[in-house]
Each structure stands twice: as structure tokens, then as C-alpha cells.
Image (cartoon, rainbow, N blue to C red):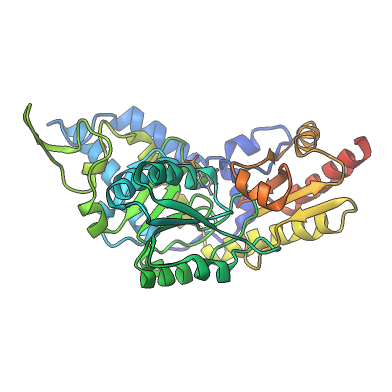
Length: 404
Ligand code: PMP
């Protein structure tokens, strides 16, 4: 298969971006726009194949089930999992992490155990652990960062001990773009006897993911941050761990047999998929993966790195603009502050120039506290952004500085 190398042409696949107007969309870390391939897959499913999966004895249900399970296999290949049944459908990263916290965490943690996260984490990788810590008597600790916004690995190794049972860490920071050294973290955590949960929400659109190479125990991602639909996400878990975990939600689909006295549970992955699943959006996510698969990965990463480097360089030269986070390895996020301006005001004024960024704490309030700032303005890039978008951002910031 020949993969597409003309990355600049990909923008034409996104109707929201090409449908007229002059929007510069720099908020892909919040959610990406969707290519026609994904929109078509969802529509085609509803027009041609819509039926409930796994149960009915008719051809339509067979087609729906096949498409749904093919999407699971697409995710399996995307993250390089060993088995398709290690892929659990969820609503997204948040639900995936809650599943691990409530099923694995609540049944294995004891008083005195420790859960180790980092100050870089999104609230979705903090609050579920606070809840399970309160329930079990475990303690939540956080790895610090250095001045660049990289994880302080010395602090990680200092805090990691035989008490550590779970290390929950983002692959990529949504606020600073920092890429964390997951392999190194997994290796050390396993040596200490802890399992590792990776929040991959910000990695999926930008990095190759290989759960077997990382050797992580769980990996969570969201469809909507990787060109797929909202409302669908994935939890990858190692078979042996998932097998040993109790179900966390109960109902249809997750059962094998039910009497009024007792229920036996279905095999993986269905044990964790109570109720009618989000069939259409799972198929949509499968289409997003197929779309990404059709793009040359090296060309994509080089193109994106170039656009982001340009943004960092141009903003770095602007008087009164301070880039926040300068990690040694990072992805497509550029967080910044403008002297004397509140991030929300900057966001509003950029929006008036049709430049869509995000402003605020980015669901990472502990990180903002650590950095001693109320929030940042965040421009986040992906494959449909270009040098022209960077220029529009720069012009927009110039105007903001004149206005404020
Ligand atoms: N983790 C990170 C790093 C994120 O950026 C996000 C989304 N902003 C989440 C978790 C939560 O993802 P979702 O809202 O799709 O569950």
C-alpha cells in the first residue's frame, strides 16, 4: 500500500475546515476535526448496517457485528496489542482510567499502598485516583517536573518504592506537550512491583503507539482526539490483568448466565462492556484509524514538527510573549502567556480574528499551581495545520498586544 506523503493536502479531507470562512483551528488537543472518511463511515453504518450487535439472528445484525468487531481489530493493530479482546470500548480516556481505578484499583489497593502520578496530569488522570485512594486508604503521590516542563526522573525514582502499586502517567501532556519516557518509567515501575497505566489521550494523533514495546499494563485513549467521533474510546489492558479484574458496570452483554440469585460473567472484552455499545462511533473510530494508516507516518511527523517548530520560533521572538513549557521532546502543543494579559482575554481576542485556541488551566490545575500561573493560552496543532496558520496566529497575537 502506498501511503500519502503530501501532508499539506490532507486539510481538504476535513469539511469543517474547508467549508468556507477563514477559521484557523488551533484547538486539536481539545478535540480534532473529523475527515470525510469518518463522517461517511458513520453515515454508511446507519444507512446500510444499523442493528444491535452480537445478539440477533439476522443478516443486518451480522453485518453490524462484523463492522463493530473489525473496528476493535483496527484498534488492536493501531496500538499493537497481542489480542483483540485486550481492547475494551469505553466512552473515552476518562472512562478508561475510571474503569482501571474502580475495577483494578479498588480491589487490589490496601491502606499504605501508593499510587504515583505526576504534576503534569490531566484531571482525568488525577481525580479517579483520588477517589480510589479515599476508598482504599492508599496514598496519592505526584512526580515533580523541572523548569522546562519535563518530568523530574530523579524525583520519580526517589518516590518509587515497594509501596507503589500503580503508576498512572500521561504519554503526552495536554498543557505543555511534553512527551514522557514511558518505557523507562514502565521498566522501573515493574522492577518495583507496580503496574503502569498510561493516559494516551494526547499521543494517539501524533505518535506511533506500541503497547507491547512500551510493556505498559493499561493504555487509555479517546477517539475524538484522533480524528474519530466523540463518545468512543479505548482501554487496552494486558489479558492476565483484565481477566483477573471484576466487572465495573453491570447489565446486558457483560453476562454469560443470569439467574435471580447469581450471574456469571462473559469473557473478555465483553465483561467490561455492559449494555448496547456505541456501535456507530466504534466504527467511526475504526475509519479514523484506517485514515491515519493511509498516511505516511514519517512524513506526517516531519510536517507537524516543522509547523510546531515554526510556531515556537515565531512566538519565541515576540516581545511580551512567554512560551510555557520547553520540554526536551514534545508534540504539537504550544502554551504561552502574554505579559499583562489574562489568558481568557487573549483567547477571546484571537477568536474575534477567527483563530481558535484554548485558554485556561486545560484541566490541569495542579500543573498551573506548580507553574505559579492561572492558566495559559494553548495553540495545539495537528496534521491539517500549516505555516499559514502560524502566521495568522502571530498576526492575531500582534493585534492582541496592540489592543491590551
Ligand atoms: N488526558 C489528557 C492528557 C487529555 O488531554 C484529555 C482530554 N483533554 C483527557 C485525558 C480526557 O479525555 P476525554 O475527555 O476524551 O475522556
